[in-house]
Amino acid sequence: MGSDQALPEFSQYHDLKDDEKILYHPISILSPPSARHRGARNMGVLLLFSMLCALGLYVVVVTADSARSTTLGLNAPSLLFKLPKSWAQYSPYFPVEEYGDPPQHCRVTQVNIIQRHGARYPTSGSAKMIVAALNKLLSVEEFTDDRLNFLKDYNYRLGENDLLPFGARESQLAGQVHFTRYKHLVSHGQLPYYQQSKILSASNIVAIAGFSIASHHVYNPSLSLIISEKLNNTLHAEMCPNAGTAIAQTSEWLSKYGPAIAERLNRHAPGANLTSTDVFGLLSLCPFESVSLNRLSSFCKLFSESEFQQFEYSGDLDKYYNTGYGQPLGPVQGVGYVNELLARLTGTPVRDNTQTNRTLDASPVTFPLNRTIYADFSHDNQMIAIYAAIGLFKQHTAPDPSFPNPKRNWLASHLVPFSARMVTEKLACGRRGEEFVRIFVNDAMQPLEFCGAGKDGLCTLRAFVESQAYARNDGNGDFEKCYE
Ligand SMILES: *[C@@H]1O[C@H](CO)[C@@H](O)[C@H](O)[C@H]1NC(C)=O
Ligand SMILES: *[C@@H]1O[C@H](CO)[C@@H](O)[C@H](O)[C@H]1NC(C)=O
Ligand SMILES: *[C@@H]1O[C@H](CO)[C@@H](O)[C@H](O)[C@H]1NC(C)=O
Ligand SMILES: *[C@@H]1O[C@H](CO)[C@@H](O)[C@H](O)[C@H]1NC(C)=O
Image 1: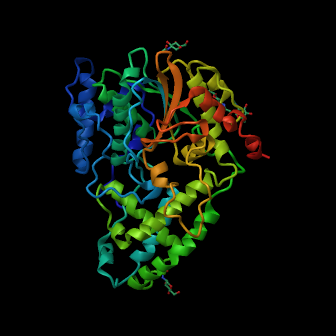
Image 2: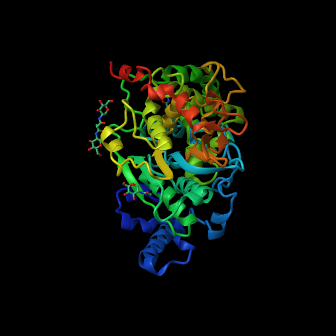
Image 3: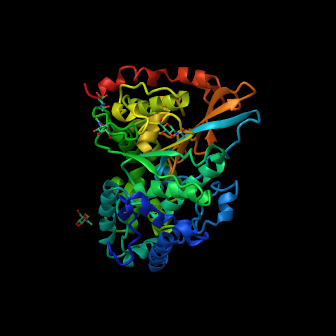
């Protein structure tokens, strides 16, 4: 794990004060600095340039013009390889569909965004699995397949957990898209209210910077609240100690597809003794190394497209059985967020007896109800729990751990890729301004059949609130089961 080519440590920015945040508005490089911010901005330019030049890896090139373009964000940050969609939750962000403007007689009056961080290094658990598999491969003396020869002088250089430049760009683009799409809701007295679980702050800060950049720095919102993951927190999925895991289902599936791949690799790498678990680690190295190098990792070439589809199904099963519909105590973990969402949509105090922090939610400072844009930063598992609490992506039959349904729409890459987002829009329609709701997940409009939506995806606010009985009833007793 050489450090000679280390990537920028975005984590080092974690706990900066507000007035220091200007330092990493990446666009400062390109936009004309205003007199007021010139000093700070020049420092920022210097810092960024020295970081980027030293690395020679990555340059943020968003021009003011592209921020204005309405198609912005329809393209993922440029990767120098074809955008892979079979990398499950490690897929780079891509819009699943093209965002559709509201019907002509409606206008958006409020938006509620919940967003996952951009691409990051593997977690320490994933990294451990990857390194264990790599060490076996690297101990092999003679490979019998040329595709493995790159390993002769290979060095593993990935860090753990930290945001990658590629991920920063994903997050920043999200902020830009949101400003561009919803700028009619923004004014100096009405800036977005941002809160986050205490994770990957750098990702969230660049998302907020993206918003500011798209407004040509006219609007410079900041992170309003950071909530500890050790306490009551509606943005974190680890508050239900009795919830199970997806290990049984993912292990069953791995035992189906892993051995054949292990056998093939062991044939080409005699003595490596790779197991199915190692195979999973090596498969996951492909996405992780690709997003960190910004080019396709050599590990990707060791596997076929259909093997990546098998890998993807592992992620689909993991999300479904870990905090999704397949986990009896999964959806309840999304209830706190849904109740906060209902409070914002209806402009009434939060009513929740699950994982909300009642102190925070009772105060207009930490839980304002008079904003037009709310953005919360969270995790993939928590977003899955929220989708399930709401009733999105409901499955007729549970995914079979031994056989993927090729027509399934439960795809981790569509649900929670890096920088995934769910956006709940409140709309006012017609002369009387009747209130409606639409929901987008990664720009795909959700059918909301549970509250009577038609082709336009609109439910009346009232029908939507009524449809959320599971959340309004605090999970019908499920929350108590988290502790019993
Ligand atoms: C919202 O309410 C708070 C507290 O009453 C007030 O300080 C703030 O100015 C209001 N903000 C907007 C955008 O109306
Ligand atoms: C609730 O939030 C307040 C204010 O941040 C904090 O002091 C308190 O510890 C939190 N309590 C729980 C149980 O999360
Ligand atoms: C693979 O297994 C063989 C036979 O048990 C053993 O000699 C060898 O050291 C193992 N290789 C690795 C990399 O563990
Ligand atoms: C935290 O959540 C628990 C469980 O619902 C609840 O009993 C407690 O009152 C909450 N604490 C705060 C400060 O909201």
